[in-house]
Length: 268
Image (tube, helix red, strand yellow):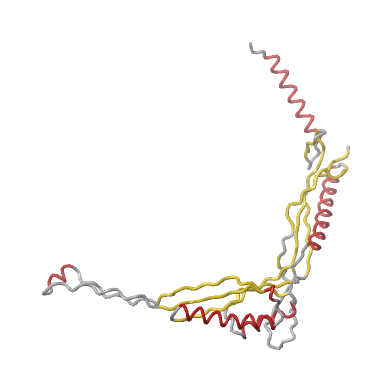
C-alpha cells in the first residue's frame, strides 16, 4: 500500500486530541483512575494508623549447659539439671503446656594443642650422623564434651515473670536467651489501627482536594498495605512481684500498626 502523509497526519492529530482530553480530566495533585466504566477523576492517598496496648504474654528460652570428660556424663548431668529446672518452673506457676523443648545438643570441644617443635631442614639433617629419626606419632585429641538443653517458656501471669526467671536460675539454669512480650490476640488493637488509618487517609485526601480546588467524592478502592506488626514502645512499666528476690522485669507497651491506600473519586 502506498504511504499517505495526509492520513498519517490525521491519525496523529486524533491521538494528540485524545491525550489532551484525558489530561484535562485529572486535576493538579490527582491522577486518572481507569475502571470498567471508563476513566474516573481521582486522588490516591495513603493513611497510617497505630494502637498501643499492654502485652499479655511473655516468652523466653531457658537452658542448662554442662561439661564432662565423656559424652555419657555430660548428657546425664544436663538431663538431671534440666529436670530440676522444669520442676521449679512448674512450681512457679508455668503450665506444662507452656513448656517446650527448643534445642538439645552435644559437642566435643578440643583443648588447644601445644606448639610443635620445628622440624630440621634437609641441610641440618644431613650433617647429623646416622639415619634421621621417624616423626613422632600424632597424639589423640584431648578435650571435653558439652551438652545443652534449652526449653522455651511462656509466662501468662506477667506479674510473676520475674519470679519465674529467678526460680529457673535457682534450680540450676545457666543459660537465658532474652525475654519478649507479645499479644496473644492483637485483633482488637488492629481494628483500632485500621480505623485511624482510614481516618488519616480521608483527612489527607480532603486537604489535597481543597488545595486543588475540587470536591472529594466517594472512595473507589481501598487496599490494606500492612498490618498487625507489634513492636516495643520506649515507655516501660516495672512489673510487681510477690517474691523479694525476683528478677526485675519491665513489660513496656506494644504497638500495632497498619497502612491503607485509598483512591477517592473527584466530583465534577
